[in-house]
Amino acid sequence: MIKKIKTLSSFLCVLIFTSSYVFAEPKQAAIASAHPLATQAGIDILRQGGNAFDAAAAITASLAVVEPYSSGLGGGAFWLVHRSSDKKQTMIDGREKAPMRSTHDMYLDKAGNVVKGLSLNGPMAAGIPGVPAGIEHLVKNYGRLSLKQVLAPAIKQAQEGFAVTERYQKLMGYRKEVIKQYPDAAQIFLNKYDVPAIGALIVQKDLANTLITLANNGRKGFYQGPVAKQLVSSVRENGGIWEPGDLEKYQIIEREPIVVNYNGIKVTSASPPSSGGIVMGQALNILEQFNLEKLDSITRKHIVIEAMRRSYRDRAAYLGDPDFIDIPVDRLLDKNYAGGLALTINSERATPSSELSNIATIDQIGTDTTHFSVVDPEGNRVSATLSINLPFGSGFVAKGTGVLLNNEMDDFSVKPLTANAYGLVGDHANAIAPGKRPLSSMTPTFLETDDRIAVLGTPGGSRIISMVLLGVLDFAEGNAPKSWVSLPRYHHQYLPDQVQYEQGGLSDLEQTALKDKGHVLKEKNRRYGNMQAIMIWKKKGLFFAASDPRGEGSAEVFYYP
Ligand code: GLY
Image 1 (cartoon, rainbow, N blue to C red):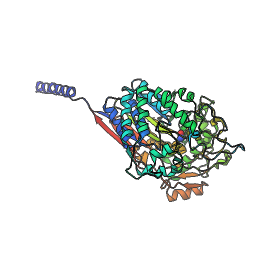
Image 2: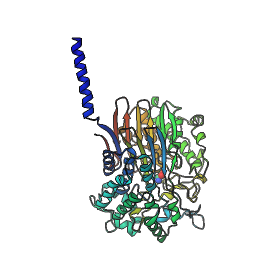
Image 3: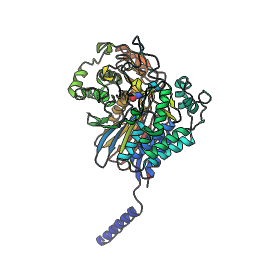
Image 4: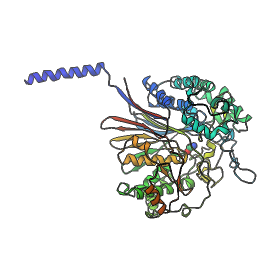
């Protein structure tokens, strides 16, 4: 009998060995992005043998084509990267830079007042783009395929066109009047100066050619040669200040991400020139002083709001481009400092922001930007947030290039202590200077515990940080991506001194109770954010992915040989 079992087990061993030899283990990967065509571009690249970094480059290029209102070759991005072979974690900083002819007061009139629209519309609003250099950097330093291979899906999408959706129409609605002023943009994105119908195809032949030049020549194809010449001359002809040297000298920088520990979760996120990692890390450090899970929903939300208020206050005071200013990162993320701030929170009453400081501000006018998350079978992962700032950026396309330029210059503090388009105030730390990167709120993030890994992020202007913060708190409670991306959202950014919340973000009871505590509430007229998230449950080897129900994105967990 024993002999029989032995024989059987060796037979099974041979069978298992043989079958695993013949049929390779299927590989599991996940992608969540704001557009199904971009998710598909990433899937195609993984199936061709690319890794998560190749897929990230392909998704970046694809989003530049099919989500022109959110990101593009004319914009910037932060790619947070984890390489499994050596556990390297880095942030690839492809943020825009101020042109060298920028000046501190370039958006002010002679009386020192902000010239309305100058930092938002047309080529004067555009920083020097970082996305094309970032795509090359990802592929060259981390990828496995060629630039030609990873750019092929985006080139095809630009040549064949993508269909207008409700989201396209809505975002175009905000920016139509600006785009109408720029014939090269209007010709591509409008239909006879009107918002195109749902299903109409947006074909971008010039953008396809620019992508082909990038594919053939690498970053030189964009930052030097005929494309660069065309970008600069078109910007100059329309009142902008770019010079050839601005493009030629643009550099990607790899920066050490911000890492904080929140109740045993390792939180890795964007470092300056994004404020995301520091502001979120500081808020988490404050919240660690409270036992949030034990609190009723009203007290809990009050405490979270007060933590947001305090960390956004420090954003306004201290944060900017680290290549230009000294940021007290260690102090801002010090647990004792957070402990001190936590002590100033009264669980019964809202702290007026004027008690922290008194600064005038304006309201927000709108937000855009985009995010994607990707994990490959080897455990490489990328969390990337990309932007051209407001929907359709500056509204200006450089003639013959198809490149829609950003209006990221508005992310600078164009006048100290005066709010930008997101209602955010800043001071000297984020003042304009030639070659400087404007302070961002983009918060691409990784979370790690012994048994779970998460990759998440979202667009949403100043509200990006608070949305990711709420996602982290939901992860901490043991929930999965579908819950993080759907959570009702609320936000406080120090100034304006109000709790903003999306439709359904606060229940009637919570609204009444928060008002009783002294909060001023402001309901936004729509739901906001477009979170794209992935989670790996290590013990079970299971992947989960989810795309925000507020958007039109797609999240896929898939297997391939
Ligand atoms: N333009 C949005 C941000 O970078 O925060």
